[in-house]
Image (cartoon, rainbow, N blue to C red):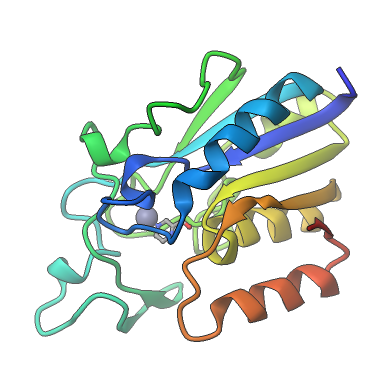
Length: 202
Ligand code: VGL
Ligand code: ZN
């Protein structure tokens, strides 16, 4: 194990974010063999699952007259509206079949409250409601985290920025991430990471 005090956090490698899925990230499934190969090198392994009720407020289908990828204003700020995706218990919400999930110490689910989305593995989109991951990592004495998965510019970036804000030493392995890239979101996410001392591996 190369990184005994480091957690690998595998973000949302679920069928709906892979080819053929409801919110397919271009080439999303390409991360699977890379992540599988990374797992043995980390002392702590956490996987996340985007896990929405079927009437989740981030779905365009719940807002009359709105199309996917338009935005709405919520109490907690601007929210992008997505196609229905990662509905609890569906095939789309399941991990990609080739992802090795047995090594997971913890699987954390997020986005399960109807009225609020959660991109980050640490806090919901109000940036306040915790998922519990912070406490888990701190009580396991983790100092450093490496992130990989989907999508670079949403759940991976938000998770990395929260981890940095919480004082973890953060690396994003971009080789094992793929992006949605909506209206320049990838460029802006990469610049946010750089400005917040997140190390990026390419
Ligand atoms: C994600 C959009 C909506 C992600 C999740 O995993 O990056 N993006 N829900
Ligand atoms: Zn989602």
